[in-house]
Length: 611
Image (cartoon, rainbow, N blue to C red; front, side):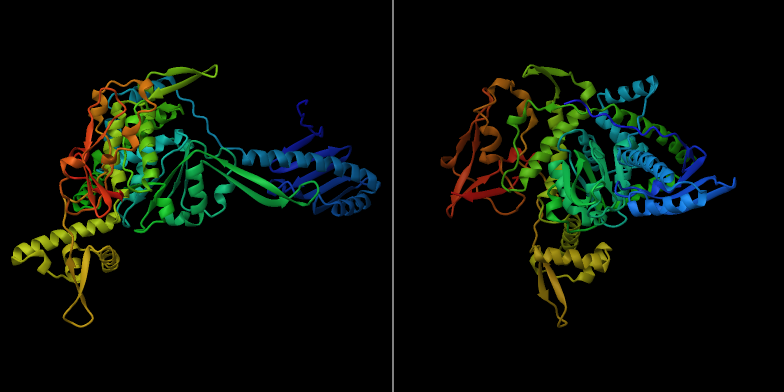
């Protein structure tokens, strides 16, 4: 089939600002309002024709009409012919050429408006060299964290690094989604702004709020390998459904009804938005839509007093002469990091150790958390792409280029996952858990002062408000949640309708942060000789080993008997066999997480399933 050739209307015209001027003989046409026509079904303009009539005088006719409609065109031709004293057929022929030329100009404007606005940034040799030096720095991750501090973002090392790696994951086929959760004025927006400042402006799209249908009409490939940042999750509440689809499927399709520009009949138009896109949100809500929550990596801002003191110190130093000078250095540092991000390109990342990795499998939601963990490993490798050799494998007669993740990447991912994804499996929101720890400190101190047992101590909401300094509305919400989750037991007080509380919570370790059990020790992977040919029928180590399960629940645990020991065989040929203890209890099989798997010397938890 021969290629289609676009027909251009050979009508001379001149642009005078926004006006379109055309001349046919001694007749001049001026068109205004063309830019307001944003649909192919309309061509409504203000049209003026000027010429010399039969008496030698200048005559004109002006009207506003839709040139797509035949009746207004006929009326214009008739009136203009009478004013200029010429035949109506001459004006009709002129209008036909004006109409076709304006239609061509309108369609070109619409195409340009819908085309993705890509700003090509050309780096100089010096800028490219500086950016490449940064990307090849063996201390790249440490440099990133240090540069955040130089730019005024104090503390929050894990959150900054996790959010930064989330932005890098935009180059992967399934990027991470980041949700920053905190109380009002705690610094969630500052964290988002600090991370986005390290990303080139042309690679991020930022909104304060979006409507339910706005995502569907952003144009093709407009968001591909970009960051979609929305200042508040509440501002995206009406667009929650398309956001979930965009995160899960990497694209959006919608069929919408519209008029055919030729026939005027209603037809179906299809609109597409292509991903992948990295989604970045913030929220003050303590309760988040579960469907959105399990698709995101949730970061919790540090609200401790020490962090507030550090922020105050940075704010005061920013007012000094040294702070003003650092502000000029900040712009140069951000330019360097933006240029480095411009040098990162999408490239496939293979994980040669993937079959040897382990992850919690006691809850269905860990299916998505496991995917986040694997994506995090690949994002770390992608950030170091200029420090890794480019490997090539022939596939179906074509070269396939990729890089590989290393054990160091897995070690970093394990640390970040233990600190961040562990919170996603907690049954309490971060602010609620923080209150629980503060209440525990208060109860411990009062019991020690009064020399009584914890079960004998009762306290009111006023006592907690005095001890913590929290507001009554915030306190009421989180105390209610602690009571519902049975961390607090309510008793009727001595004044009729009042209530006092009893703390029924025993802290394990420091209790400040849930951990993510079930991740394999990287040193075990490091000590084994990897052979890619061994992967296949010996993958039991990753999925079926019960000993890798664990929860965050607390409670008494009895030691298993030697007779109940099973053996799980890793897929490595020279790996030692791992003994997994079990016990039978009321028709259930209970697997106790080995102490060594939690990283802090404590049991990671108990997972049960039918015997």
